[in-house]
Image 1 (spheres, rainbow, N blue to C red):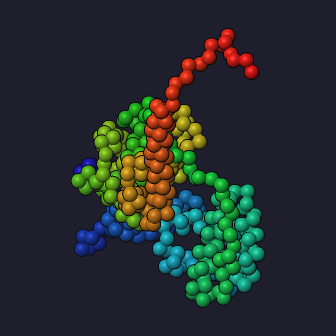
Image 2: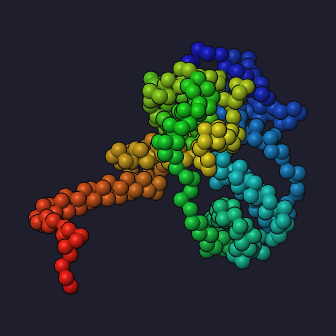
Image 3: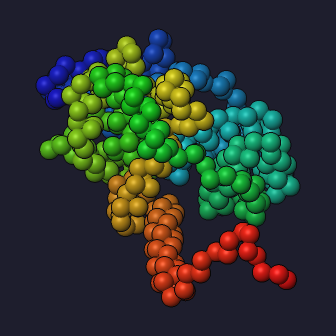
Length: 365
């Protein structure tokens, strides 16, 4: 796989210094020239490229000079801090979108005016979409927790504001019948089928699945840092995935690519995958539901919490415990039912079988 030519991505420029060292830069149109760190195609390089590409695709908000002590001033300081830069690109982008709307309304307010009532009002404004309301609150909590540690505020107004309770189990998981239906619709050798096999045979998140490529494979094992938390993943290439990769079609920088051979964002892929699911008769399910199915399969086949954490890139047992607990409950319920059946059969053997009285000879009451 490694000897295949690499396709040059849009807006990427190569520079070789007088010592022969190669550097890569990103520059869109007449925009800022951005250095891309690491080797071409590495996870570090790709993360920087995706960040630069996202900057031109969503457009940059107009620069507004922030007055000292305002909410806008506080946010600008946060974005220059290590607390901001050490989070994943996806988290920064989500927070950036939320903060952009917040600053449009309240950017010039003094930080002291941002009370717990103001945070609560922002949450309630978004209550019709609980997930958005809770994401807003998570962002405010992260901002003011950092500001408190840096002694830029005296109190944290978001700390005691509660999340909206969401009565949902999240993304609906797929079943093996869904997998069979999808495979029946999309043959090996199609992009649609390749997407499924990458998801179900690795259990990766969309953000990792759209990035993984030849450069991450050694001895039939995928080595890639998880995009969400930078945890190193070690995933063997299973037979079904090996068959799909051999049939293609493959991109240059990543196994999965657009129909034009270019890498896709996780959002673009997610939208396309939902469309392919509908065409296969699978409705109201998404790519993340396949990850849940993969975790369920591991747990129901005796996988431990530690094994789940290692394969799926979880850093705590919060998620792994959910799957092992459900698998154990199912296993224990089946064992209990079997014991109940055994006892009932034993009792029935002890009871004499009475022949029913003929209908015409019922005893007189």
